[in-house]
Image 1 (cartoon, rainbow, N blue to C red):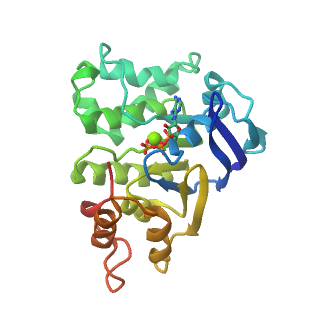
Image 2 (image 1 turned 30 degrees about the horizontal axis):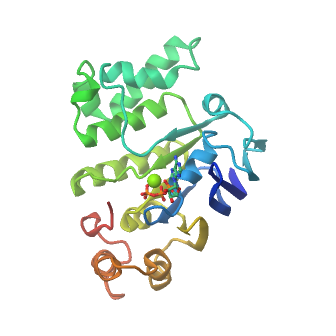
Length: 267
Ligand SMILES: Nc1ncnc2c1ncn2[C@@H]1O[C@H](COP(=O)(O)OP(=O)(O)OP(=O)(O)O)[C@@H](O)[C@H]1O
Ligand SMILES: [Mg+2]
């Protein structure tokens, strides 16, 4: 279980997170939603050891993590897939995936089995395993980033906006993959702007606004979509447009709560 307790963090003198708390139960999927600049990536960077919090505590399975440096996180069971689908462009797809196993050099046979498991999950990466990663499509790069993270054998996976800038079809594929990772026993923290993806996948949803958790709810058939909309959308010039998009996803209260991906609010 991941427990985030009142963390504060920022860049230099500019504070961005003002006491964030939430948890991800074992084998659970918790989603953190929020608009641009609300502090989602900063939260993940703090959890991944890239930006040590100035206050608060982070615990994973009873181990305190908030003073553990980023390069030791994989060994503690936590792996971060950053926003932006970055890959080592001049290396092959397979070399990129293998980078995820950097801390496991002694376990060659097991790493090979894990690599095969990644290919089973992402057949497209198997087809393109010798291609330069820089030549992959956006969707393939996202799959590669997740595949590389899986080679670290995490118990806790942090995903930063995996659906961003992808077509609805590929977003659907990524959602299926995330769902299947749960059946393999992983716990997942999913950061998204895509409300429908969170509604499809999450057990718990937290909405960040200006570095604070503005609203938290348990997901399910009777999730309070009105509050979700209100807290997620807030105000600002894009409100009308975004309200229309969320309504398209969720229906006006008569249809199923978990709508298709096509109407997703995203970047
Ligand atoms: N490296 C940095 N140095 C200084 N300020 C930063 C840095 N990275 C982010 N910020 C600021 O921190 C705030 C939160 O940014 P963050 O990247 O966490 O937002 P986000 O919720 O992930 O947004 P997005 O959906 O656009 O990715 C913003 O005001 C941003 O300008
Ligand atoms: Mg971000």
